[in-house]
Image (cartoon, rainbow, N blue to C red; front, side, top):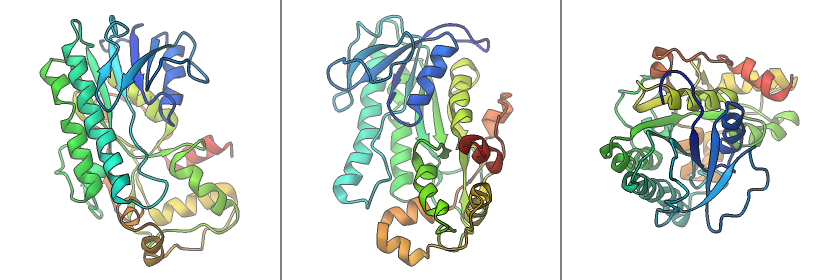
Length: 312
């Protein structure tokens, strides 16, 4: 691919997830052919994108239907066990790590073995890479953090190395909190906030790096098309907010009070380690490389993103 968008075949893992289900139709609308890599038998997805094909992929072993991948120009790898949805038991943590690290390593190695490898692999990562960093401004060159999520993200990104060694351009997208009414953190927040029971978590000073779902999809297309982009790329909006401002803004958009805090001790009681690393950790992340390569955000402010997503 080059800096000028042209039709190509793009394979996508995680195409039924929050991001993948928005990306696949956007790729098709842009004139690309979409190949969905799915677990098990190549059954048609419930709502396939126009022109989408389906091929089998086994994330545990990394096995791919190599014949189906003939002629694929690019791969977007989004699959992975959700980090939300309850306490992190040891079994849950093993699934989180394995689905990202082992699945990515197997995929990257399979792509590297193809007779004609794709030109680019855009592989999801997360701002969890940076750990809990307070108010420090974090760019792509910032050091990694500590903790379970930070370690998983580091291993997740390293797992793409077989593809990079095969001269596939690899972009590792460090994705922030995705603003979408269809799932993720925002969807989980809507019911309590609409009931007037929302508010900041802990002290509310922790920084939240977020991105509107439309901008994330556009950033993936930008990464596919921009030949100068390789390595880590922060997929976050240019204006991170503190948690207390996130609560105030969502309350304002919904026309509801946002005055009931969730104390840190209560969050830890409910969610254990997950509370510390997802809700109470602070990551003030800047999209330096996206901006340096001319990416234009449609929703650069949180209020604009929320009003657009919630139709307010």
